[in-house]
Length: 178
Length: 178
Image (cartoon, chains in turn purple, blue):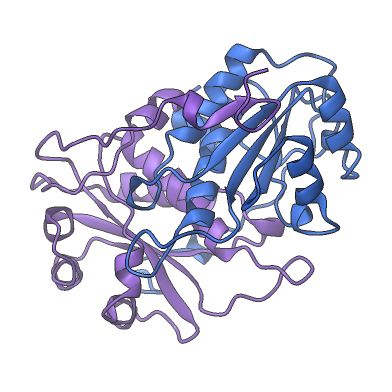
Protein backbone atom coordinates (compact mmCIF):
# COMPACT_ATOMS: atom_id res chain seq x y z
CA UNK A 1 0.00 0.00 0.00
CA UNK A 2 1.18 3.49 -0.84
CA UNK A 3 2.62 5.38 2.15
CA UNK A 4 0.25 8.36 2.02
CA UNK A 5 -2.71 5.99 1.55
CA UNK A 6 -1.69 3.96 4.62
CA UNK A 7 -1.46 7.22 6.60
CA UNK A 8 -5.00 8.23 5.58
CA UNK A 9 -6.48 4.71 5.85
CA UNK A 10 -5.19 4.07 9.39
CA UNK A 11 -7.87 4.43 12.04
CA UNK A 12 -8.46 3.28 15.61
CA UNK A 13 -10.43 0.05 15.41
CA UNK A 14 -12.06 -1.16 18.65
CA UNK A 15 -14.51 -3.71 17.17
CA UNK A 16 -14.24 -7.49 16.92
CA UNK A 17 -11.68 -9.20 14.72
CA UNK A 18 -12.39 -12.07 12.36
CA UNK A 19 -11.21 -15.49 13.49
CA UNK A 20 -8.28 -15.40 11.08
CA UNK A 21 -4.66 -15.81 12.17
CA UNK A 22 -1.99 -13.16 11.72
CA UNK A 23 1.02 -14.91 10.21
CA UNK A 24 4.43 -14.79 11.87
CA UNK A 25 5.75 -13.40 8.60
CA UNK A 26 3.37 -10.42 8.87
CA UNK A 27 4.02 -10.02 12.60
CA UNK A 28 7.74 -9.91 11.87
CA UNK A 29 7.18 -7.23 9.22
CA UNK A 30 5.13 -5.18 11.70
CA UNK A 31 7.74 -5.52 14.48
CA UNK A 32 10.51 -4.68 12.01
CA UNK A 33 8.65 -1.51 10.99
CA UNK A 34 8.46 -0.58 14.68
CA UNK A 35 12.23 -1.06 15.17
CA UNK A 36 12.97 1.20 12.17
CA UNK A 37 11.38 4.26 13.80
CA UNK A 38 13.69 7.11 14.75
CA UNK A 39 14.75 7.43 18.40
CA UNK A 40 16.51 10.13 20.42
CA UNK A 41 20.27 9.89 19.68
CA UNK A 42 19.46 6.63 17.83
CA UNK A 43 19.37 4.84 21.21
CA UNK A 44 16.59 2.49 20.01
CA UNK A 45 15.20 2.28 23.52
CA UNK A 46 11.89 0.49 22.88
CA UNK A 47 11.67 -3.31 23.23
CA UNK A 48 8.88 -5.44 21.76
CA UNK A 49 7.05 -8.61 22.64
CA UNK A 50 4.84 -10.09 19.93
CA UNK A 51 2.08 -12.25 21.38
CA UNK A 52 0.36 -14.93 19.30
CA UNK A 53 -0.06 -17.62 21.96
CA UNK A 54 -3.80 -18.22 22.41
CA UNK A 55 -3.65 -18.67 26.19
CA UNK A 56 -1.62 -15.50 26.76
CA UNK A 57 -3.91 -13.54 24.41
CA UNK A 58 -6.92 -14.71 26.41
CA UNK A 59 -5.40 -13.61 29.71
CA UNK A 60 -4.42 -10.20 28.37
CA UNK A 61 -7.79 -9.76 26.62
CA UNK A 62 -9.54 -10.31 29.95
CA UNK A 63 -7.93 -7.11 31.30
CA UNK A 64 -9.69 -4.69 28.92
CA UNK A 65 -13.35 -4.48 27.86
CA UNK A 66 -13.19 -3.65 24.13
CA UNK A 67 -13.94 -6.32 21.52
CA UNK A 68 -10.63 -5.76 19.74
CA UNK A 69 -8.80 -6.89 22.89
CA UNK A 70 -11.04 -9.93 23.41
CA UNK A 71 -10.75 -11.21 19.82
CA UNK A 72 -7.25 -10.21 18.68
CA UNK A 73 -5.28 -13.08 17.17
CA UNK A 74 -2.04 -11.24 17.93
CA UNK A 75 -0.79 -8.30 19.98
CA UNK A 76 2.35 -6.19 19.91
CA UNK A 77 3.72 -4.86 23.21
CA UNK A 78 5.95 -1.76 23.42
CA UNK A 79 8.25 -1.82 26.45
CA UNK A 80 10.29 1.08 27.83
CA UNK A 81 12.28 1.78 30.99
CA UNK A 82 10.34 2.88 34.09
CA UNK A 83 13.03 5.49 34.82
CA UNK A 84 14.77 6.25 31.52
CA UNK A 85 18.41 7.39 31.61
CA UNK A 86 19.27 10.75 30.08
CA UNK A 87 20.65 10.36 26.55
CA UNK A 88 21.12 14.04 25.59
CA UNK A 89 22.00 16.66 28.18
CA UNK A 90 19.57 15.87 31.02
CA UNK A 91 16.83 14.63 28.71
CA UNK A 92 15.44 11.24 27.75
CA UNK A 93 13.00 10.58 24.94
CA UNK A 94 11.64 7.10 25.60
CA UNK A 95 7.92 8.00 25.40
CA UNK A 96 8.59 9.75 22.07
CA UNK A 97 10.77 6.86 20.80
CA UNK A 98 7.98 4.48 21.72
CA UNK A 99 5.25 6.60 20.10
CA UNK A 100 7.17 6.81 16.81
CA UNK A 101 7.59 3.01 16.87
CA UNK A 102 3.85 2.59 17.56
CA UNK A 103 2.96 4.80 14.61
CA UNK A 104 5.26 2.83 12.28
CA UNK A 105 3.66 -0.41 13.48
CA UNK A 106 0.13 0.99 12.99
CA UNK A 107 0.96 1.98 9.41
CA UNK A 108 2.49 -1.44 8.68
CA UNK A 109 -0.63 -3.08 10.19
CA UNK A 110 -2.82 -0.97 7.90
CA UNK A 111 -0.66 -1.62 4.83
CA UNK A 112 -0.85 -5.39 5.44
CA UNK A 113 -4.68 -5.38 5.66
CA UNK A 114 -5.10 -5.55 9.44
CA UNK A 115 -6.45 -3.04 11.95
CA UNK A 116 -5.55 -2.03 15.51
CA UNK A 117 -5.96 0.59 18.21
CA UNK A 118 -3.34 2.32 20.39
CA UNK A 119 -3.91 1.10 23.98
CA UNK A 120 -1.92 3.34 26.32
CA UNK A 121 -3.57 5.14 29.25
CA UNK A 122 -5.64 2.07 30.16
CA UNK A 123 -2.42 0.12 30.79
CA UNK A 124 -1.37 2.64 33.43
CA UNK A 125 -4.51 1.91 35.49
CA UNK A 126 -5.65 -0.98 37.70
CA UNK A 127 -2.23 -2.66 37.53
CA UNK A 128 -2.78 -3.77 33.93
CA UNK A 129 0.76 -3.04 32.70
CA UNK A 130 2.18 -4.90 35.71
CA UNK A 131 -0.06 -7.93 35.12
CA UNK A 132 0.93 -8.09 31.45
CA UNK A 133 4.57 -7.59 32.43
CA UNK A 134 4.39 -10.62 34.72
CA UNK A 135 2.75 -12.77 32.03
CA UNK A 136 5.45 -11.85 29.51
CA UNK A 137 8.41 -11.97 31.94
CA UNK A 138 9.22 -8.30 31.41
CA UNK A 139 12.24 -7.58 33.63
CA UNK A 140 12.10 -5.30 36.65
CA UNK A 141 12.69 -1.67 35.73
CA UNK A 142 10.81 -1.99 32.45
CA UNK A 143 7.12 -1.45 31.72
CA UNK A 144 4.64 -2.24 28.95
CA UNK A 145 3.84 1.28 27.82
CA UNK A 146 1.67 0.60 24.77
CA UNK A 147 -0.20 -2.42 23.41
CA UNK A 148 -1.60 -2.96 19.92
CA UNK A 149 -4.21 -5.70 19.35
CA UNK A 150 -3.91 -6.92 15.75
CA UNK A 151 -6.35 -8.73 13.47
CA UNK A 152 -8.57 -8.61 10.42
CA UNK A 153 -11.54 -6.38 11.27
CA UNK A 154 -14.96 -8.08 11.30
CA UNK A 155 -16.86 -4.82 10.76
CA UNK A 156 -16.23 -1.37 9.34
CA UNK A 157 -15.93 0.44 12.66
CA UNK A 158 -16.49 4.18 13.07
CA UNK A 159 -13.75 6.44 11.74
CA UNK A 160 -13.48 9.41 14.10
CA UNK A 161 -13.70 12.85 12.51
CA UNK A 162 -10.53 14.83 12.04
CA UNK A 163 -10.41 18.62 12.26
CA UNK A 164 -9.90 20.47 8.95
CA UNK A 165 -6.26 21.20 8.15
CA UNK A 166 -6.79 24.98 8.27
CA UNK A 167 -7.80 24.76 11.95
CA UNK A 168 -4.52 23.08 12.89
CA UNK A 169 -1.84 24.21 10.41
CA UNK A 170 -0.74 27.55 8.99
CA UNK A 171 2.05 28.99 6.85
CA UNK A 172 4.75 31.17 8.43
CA UNK A 173 2.88 32.15 11.57
CA UNK A 174 0.55 30.58 14.15
CA UNK A 175 -3.09 31.10 13.11
CA UNK A 176 -2.14 33.11 10.02
CA UNK A 177 -2.29 32.22 6.35
CA UNK A 178 0.45 34.30 4.78
CA UNK B 1 6.22 5.07 -2.38
CA UNK B 2 5.13 1.84 -0.73
CA UNK B 3 4.45 2.21 3.01
CA UNK B 4 6.96 -0.39 4.21
CA UNK B 5 9.59 1.02 1.83
CA UNK B 6 9.06 4.53 3.21
CA UNK B 7 9.47 3.14 6.74
CA UNK B 8 12.78 1.48 5.84
CA UNK B 9 14.05 4.34 3.64
CA UNK B 10 13.44 7.07 6.25
CA UNK B 11 16.62 8.19 8.00
CA UNK B 12 17.84 11.19 9.96
CA UNK B 13 19.52 13.53 7.49
CA UNK B 14 21.68 16.31 8.94
CA UNK B 15 23.61 17.29 5.78
CA UNK B 16 23.05 20.18 3.38
CA UNK B 17 19.99 20.42 1.17
CA UNK B 18 20.02 21.26 -2.52
CA UNK B 19 18.86 24.75 -3.45
CA UNK B 20 15.51 23.44 -4.66
CA UNK B 21 12.15 24.66 -3.34
CA UNK B 22 9.64 22.44 -1.56
CA UNK B 23 6.27 23.15 -3.18
CA UNK B 24 3.29 24.28 -1.12
CA UNK B 25 1.44 21.31 -2.58
CA UNK B 26 4.01 18.93 -1.08
CA UNK B 27 4.16 20.87 2.21
CA UNK B 28 0.38 20.62 2.45
CA UNK B 29 0.58 16.85 1.89
CA UNK B 30 3.23 16.55 4.62
CA UNK B 31 1.21 18.64 7.10
CA UNK B 32 -1.95 16.69 6.24
CA UNK B 33 -0.13 13.43 6.96
CA UNK B 34 0.87 14.87 10.34
CA UNK B 35 -2.74 15.79 11.20
CA UNK B 36 -3.92 12.25 10.37
CA UNK B 37 -1.85 10.66 13.14
CA UNK B 38 -3.71 9.12 16.06
CA UNK B 39 -3.99 11.11 19.30
CA UNK B 40 -5.10 10.28 22.82
CA UNK B 41 -8.95 10.28 22.86
CA UNK B 42 -8.74 11.74 19.32
CA UNK B 43 -8.11 15.16 20.85
CA UNK B 44 -5.79 16.14 17.96
CA UNK B 45 -3.73 18.32 20.27
CA UNK B 46 -0.76 19.15 18.04
CA UNK B 47 -0.72 22.36 16.01
CA UNK B 48 1.56 23.00 13.03
CA UNK B 49 3.33 25.94 11.46
CA UNK B 50 4.83 25.36 8.02
CA UNK B 51 7.67 27.77 7.29
CA UNK B 52 8.76 28.56 3.74
CA UNK B 53 9.53 32.27 4.12
CA UNK B 54 13.23 32.75 3.35
CA UNK B 55 13.83 35.39 6.03
CA UNK B 56 12.16 33.32 8.80
CA UNK B 57 14.05 30.19 7.69
CA UNK B 58 17.32 32.12 7.92
CA UNK B 59 16.57 33.32 11.45
CA UNK B 60 15.58 29.84 12.64
CA UNK B 61 18.54 28.22 10.86
CA UNK B 62 20.89 30.53 12.75
CA UNK B 63 19.83 28.91 16.04
CA UNK B 64 21.20 25.42 15.28
CA UNK B 65 24.59 24.38 13.84
CA UNK B 66 23.73 21.50 11.48
CA UNK B 67 23.76 22.01 7.70
CA UNK B 68 20.19 20.72 7.34
CA UNK B 69 18.97 23.64 9.47
CA UNK B 70 21.07 26.23 7.60
CA UNK B 71 19.98 25.13 4.13
CA UNK B 72 16.37 23.88 4.55
CA UNK B 73 13.96 25.41 2.05
CA UNK B 74 11.06 24.61 4.38
CA UNK B 75 10.45 23.58 7.98
CA UNK B 76 7.53 22.07 9.82
CA UNK B 77 6.93 23.06 13.47
CA UNK B 78 5.01 20.86 15.93
CA UNK B 79 3.37 22.87 18.71
CA UNK B 80 1.85 21.53 21.91
CA UNK B 81 0.61 22.99 25.19
CA UNK B 82 3.19 23.82 27.86
CA UNK B 83 0.88 22.36 30.52
CA UNK B 84 -1.43 19.90 28.78
CA UNK B 85 -4.90 19.29 30.25
CA UNK B 86 -5.81 15.75 31.24
CA UNK B 87 -7.90 14.04 28.54
CA UNK B 88 -8.28 10.56 30.10
CA UNK B 89 -8.44 10.07 33.86
CA UNK B 90 -5.56 12.24 35.10
CA UNK B 91 -3.44 11.65 32.00
CA UNK B 92 -2.51 13.70 28.96
CA UNK B 93 -0.75 12.39 25.89
CA UNK B 94 0.47 15.48 24.06
CA UNK B 95 4.13 14.39 23.68
CA UNK B 96 2.92 11.04 22.28
CA UNK B 97 0.34 12.73 20.01
CA UNK B 98 3.10 15.01 18.74
CA UNK B 99 5.58 12.15 18.21
CA UNK B 100 3.07 10.15 16.16
CA UNK B 101 2.41 13.24 14.03
CA UNK B 102 6.16 13.74 13.56
CA UNK B 103 6.59 10.15 12.39
CA UNK B 104 3.74 10.50 9.88
CA UNK B 105 5.34 13.69 8.55
CA UNK B 106 8.77 12.04 8.30
CA UNK B 107 7.31 9.17 6.28
CA UNK B 108 5.44 11.57 3.97
CA UNK B 109 8.67 13.57 3.55
CA UNK B 110 10.50 10.36 2.58
CA UNK B 111 7.73 9.21 0.24
CA UNK B 112 7.78 12.58 -1.56
CA UNK B 113 11.56 12.42 -2.16
CA UNK B 114 12.73 14.79 0.57
CA UNK B 115 14.71 14.20 3.76
CA UNK B 116 14.62 15.58 7.29
CA UNK B 117 15.76 15.07 10.88
CA UNK B 118 13.75 15.17 14.13
CA UNK B 119 14.95 18.25 16.08
CA UNK B 120 13.62 18.00 19.63
CA UNK B 121 15.96 18.18 22.64
CA UNK B 122 17.96 21.03 21.11
CA UNK B 123 14.81 23.20 21.08
CA UNK B 124 14.50 22.83 24.84
CA UNK B 125 17.91 24.43 25.38
CA UNK B 126 19.29 27.98 25.14
CA UNK B 127 15.80 29.44 24.71
CA UNK B 128 15.53 28.15 21.13
CA UNK B 129 11.87 27.08 21.32
CA UNK B 130 10.97 30.45 22.83
CA UNK B 131 12.83 32.38 20.12
CA UNK B 132 11.11 30.38 17.36
CA UNK B 133 7.79 30.80 19.15
CA UNK B 134 8.22 34.60 19.09
CA UNK B 135 9.13 34.60 15.39
CA UNK B 136 6.05 32.54 14.54
CA UNK B 137 3.64 34.28 16.94
CA UNK B 138 2.99 31.08 18.87
CA UNK B 139 0.54 32.05 21.65
CA UNK B 140 1.43 32.02 25.34
CA UNK B 141 0.91 28.59 26.89
CA UNK B 142 2.08 26.76 23.77
CA UNK B 143 5.57 25.67 22.78
CA UNK B 144 7.38 24.47 19.67
CA UNK B 145 8.17 20.93 20.73
CA UNK B 146 9.65 19.49 17.52
CA UNK B 147 10.97 20.97 14.30
CA UNK B 148 11.60 19.21 10.97
CA UNK B 149 13.84 20.90 8.36
CA UNK B 150 12.75 19.74 4.89
CA UNK B 151 14.54 19.66 1.56
CA UNK B 152 16.12 17.59 -1.18
CA UNK B 153 19.35 16.12 0.21
CA UNK B 154 22.57 17.26 -1.48
CA UNK B 155 24.54 14.22 -0.33
CA UNK B 156 23.86 10.64 0.76
CA UNK B 157 24.35 11.19 4.47
CA UNK B 158 25.24 8.40 6.90
CA UNK B 159 22.45 5.99 7.79
CA UNK B 160 22.87 5.04 11.45
CA UNK B 161 23.02 1.32 12.23
CA UNK B 162 19.94 -0.33 13.68
CA UNK B 163 20.13 -3.21 16.14
CA UNK B 164 19.09 -6.62 14.77
CA UNK B 165 15.42 -7.44 15.31
CA UNK B 166 16.22 -10.41 17.57
CA UNK B 167 17.93 -8.11 20.08
CA UNK B 168 14.80 -5.98 20.46
CA UNK B 169 11.77 -8.18 19.76
CA UNK B 170 10.64 -11.64 20.88
CA UNK B 171 7.57 -13.85 20.61
CA UNK B 172 5.40 -14.48 23.69
CA UNK B 173 7.93 -13.51 26.36
CA UNK B 174 10.61 -10.90 26.94
CA UNK B 175 14.00 -12.15 25.71
CA UNK B 176 12.59 -15.54 24.70
CA UNK B 177 11.94 -17.03 21.29
CA UNK B 178 9.10 -19.46 21.90
